Length: 419
Image (cartoon, rainbow, N blue to C red):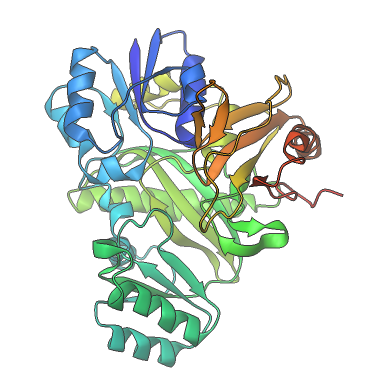
């Protein structure tokens, strides 16, 4: 088979490495990819949201399966376009991808079908939004309704912070159309986790849970980021909470999407929180999450292409998971998630059989060496029998970055702070 993977980040590099394991696959193309991905696949200079160009390439190259990594091409209808042309593609339609594309849509869906989530209201008027904040108090969460590259959520600890976020979105138009409406939610206290599932209509096949570290600095300090590391599975997670998530959240949501005329196919990502009132939904995403994918897929024993074919045929893919644990720590450019350095040379990345390196934001310099080309540059992961051993190998590897101020990483990704 020939496989096309759409995207350019760490999630896509992990998908490449997983697909490479399949005996069914002869060639892998990635559009547009990155410098590290180019070591494992053929990169194609097409932007991930250029739907017409992606379709033309897939037809010309006789691609057998396409896997969509990021959310933007999904919300632009890349799946609809490929399916209309008779091509196999893994991901939700434009109508179904609205579960990530509009927070207001998703909150209304959960309210209608009694799926547990934070109380909320949606606003287009800043005065009304600020009055709501004053009535509710802080902490409180302000979210841009649409896609804002992971930056449209503000957890406001004070009313002043909430007002500033409302002004940024509704008055200053900082996120454009994505912030023309804001969803204001109650703040949920608890412990977060993620659960992915393969979904085909009402059929739901859950993966193993993972936990992402969102804050930039050790001890969960600093600004929210796209994720500074993750681990899977989650030993302290109550198995009853996982069961509840599958039976009372994922399956009802899949059924709700069918009932709404938006049947879902692809990976459904549930961002969840364990609260005193039980598990509640923070968000849904319409694709594999990043960086959780980089610790979930290494533990999946199945051939990923066989999984896609089983789903496409309406079969249970019979997911099987390796024993052990995976931990992945992100190396970011100095300044991330704000204004960050670009073009910094990476140190030599040694081959290490105990660790794997997943490129997210890298490019090649004129002499062919790796340079930083994004906020999150790469992830170093390890799969081991115990979480402590995985953590040990990851941080031994990351010592190659300790001699440069151009990059930083958290030293506490995993199960307990590194001593």
